[in-house]
Length: 113
Length: 113
Image (cartoon, rainbow over all chains, first blue to last red; front, side, top):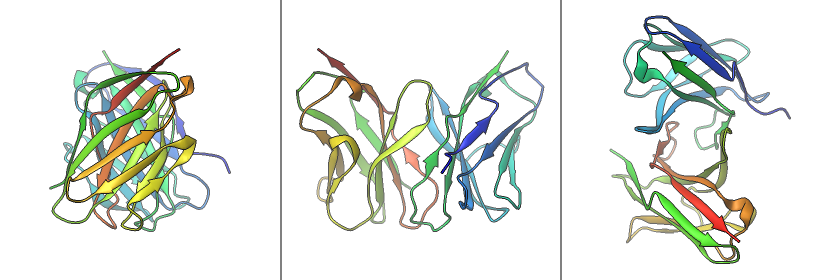
């Protein structure tokens, strides 16, 4: 089975712009979670989507949003980018049962100038 | 609220020596606990997980961890370090059935020959 894929792998944007990141889960997985990884704050949970519905949400401002499509692929959007949004954004998929482990993708490295 | 503390941001061992990475958690309910490894420019890979079954959990690559409720600890060990073990290790906690992982700050393991 192919693993979790994320596109693009690297992205450079300027302050004030918006960005969309994409995640394709492992085939058959219905849950997709997003995490932000920075040197200062570490790994932080953004949100989780299951069957096209947001099932859980972390403590991030409304500029961070996401969605999930009927094929379980997910996108994450960040509007009005700030310098502090520079981070590695990781996507993880799981079958959907709440006790299943999460499988992580390689991440998208976002740099905001 | 749940939290994870990883003692020691950097641990150095010699090849063949014991690896011990420390993790303490705080949780108001019996948690699920995880150890992940991250190699440079890659996502996270699950090493092992505790989900309220056996307290001694064996994972991949010779790693194991023991859940000690009285000490609120879940330390990761490996009897003999290998050069390929050099990476960053993250301890994480979630409530049973929860989908949001709460991560520690990580411990970088260096292995010298």
